[in-house]
Figure (cartoon, each protein chain N blue to C red):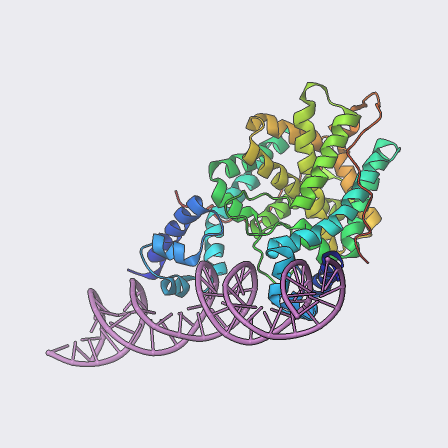
Length: 211
Length: 211
DNA sequence: ACCGGGGTGTTACCTCGGGTAACATCGTCG
DNA sequence: CGACGATGTTACCCGAGGTAACACCCCGGT
């Protein structure tokens, strides 16, 4: 059996384990699921990052392509945005564990930076950036705004999506509406509430927090 | 020397190490920095999470109090939002390593869920939720929108802030503007660009991504 | 028939980090 | 003095990532 098919089998096993145990699954566990032992995994993937990387690439391509397609859809802008949001939420809804793996950066990377966005999400952020740059007239600040918004929107959907996945406070459709409304400036447009006394929360005296 | 002051010293040492080495700093390293050995750390904090927890609480209180205060500021809504954004960005700018620790959830938590938001950020999200609920008239969907937006906005600022910290594409003020503009629906309001051919990116044939 | 290479697999080991057990010391209070 | 509560130590365990060394199996070439 040549290399590639075997790789696929191993990735399938890893997929199963992660679907069952979450992204923290150990190499031993994955090897066991595949009915083999660690060194083989390492032969195929180099190290854990290699495995995870291969795994994420498989799934990323799907999600990324879907988002990309949604971004290019010939719709009214609001509809297009909703379509993108729905695409993402549908993706994480379908295989939560796998998408957690995709969407949550690994703690390693000690030399590098502590990016908030995992590679897969960074790619999505770039797609959004490109789409904004090429489709929306933002004047001189175009590049800066597009990039900041790409990251920001991605992070927004990540956090909100995670919350939604876990507590399922509403249907996907409603969630899409809520997020689109936010991006549509509904926060800005809404009226003030008749200001009561605003008791936000019990405020402890702010400890100095060291120096 | 009674317990508390010693704890503070140890936390200070931990702080120093993390400021220097980042959130991945080992217990050994922290102990060494404090001039002692591991067991003492464990006596005081139980386990790593305990240490990290104590550390984050110290700093969280500062950031959280600042954000809370910003949220309660008697300003025009847009100004208030900008004030909050600026507060957060100023916070992470001041002590990047420490705030990375605060803002990036630890990989552990195997039994629990894969929250995108670290505890400190979840608290901020809750503050935002409360502020929106109590200050903005959103009709029947109030609770859902406020909570979704709380998470979403927090995630947005987290991701965008991280990016800004690392690549410093502009001044803090400009970044605040960019994010506030996003929340203010500038994406929705801007005109379409004269649609060229939209060459988004080299699109590889979407691999089936397994089944 | 033989050998070599590329695949399969194994056991046993290393390192490092979190976490613990057991033991020794110092100062203070009754 | 003795006990207690803090200080500290060395030495160890465990699990996870990662590697070394070895063995098998098949297939194709000479």
